[in-house]
Image 1 (spheres, rainbow, N blue to C red):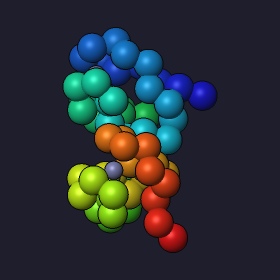
Image 2: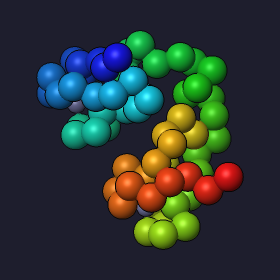
Image 3: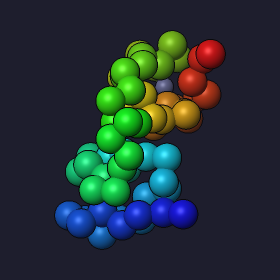
Image 4: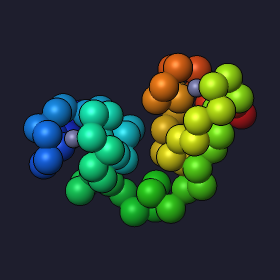
Length: 64
Ligand SMILES: [Zn+2]
Ligand SMILES: [Zn+2]
């Protein structure tokens, strides 16, 4: 499943709660997932939403 960003029309995979391109929020996101805490990527230091399984910047897997 995927969703289309209302702002830039980019297709995003379902596990993203914000748009890969413009960071617009996913209108179909499960609020329970959105409430998940952000996590910081140990590789590049960027902050990712709690619903992301991999770092959006360097694609590193979220540490357990
Ligand atoms: Zn977008
Ligand atoms: Zn990273």
